[in-house]
Amino acid sequence: DFYPLTPYSTANDVWLAWKGLPWLMVQGGQFKTPYTQEETTSSRFIDFAERSILNRFAPGRDGGIMFSGDLGEKVFEWAIGAFNGSGKNTSDPNDESDVALRVFLTPLKNSDMQILKQLRVGVAVTYGDQDGGFAQGDIHPGDITGSGITVAGIIGIGIIEEQEEEEEEEA
Image (tube, rainbow, N blue to C red):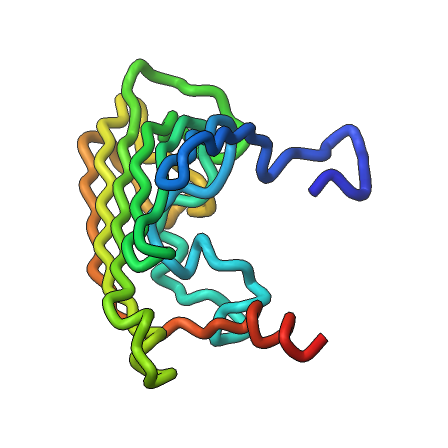
């Protein structure tokens, strides 16, 4: 994400990851906070041309460390991380960290019915205590003002599409 390279270029994702165990990956750097499925899904695979307006209030990219993994061939997926809480390409202005937790379950992934195979249930929570105001991330000035403790949570049920696999089969 550095092209075209100018004196004002910034990085979107800069991270290192280690996957030494089948069920565990450790990732550190700047990357998307594990919160909403919409935010962490490539724009190539979202259902609409634009992301929802509510996505502006979800944590975006941030610096931190995350532990994540899956069990049972991605029937159960989890991620937990500690982040600066200051957003993309910013230094940490305080001594507090944000914590994000996301859990997804695809209970019928091994079902014979295609529509049930893609049913997903998930829960995500973030917690942060900001001394100087809320983390900006992808939120523009004026969207949120104030300071203090923020707790956000989301519960989602949805159908995912396995577009990547279908595209590979066609090739």
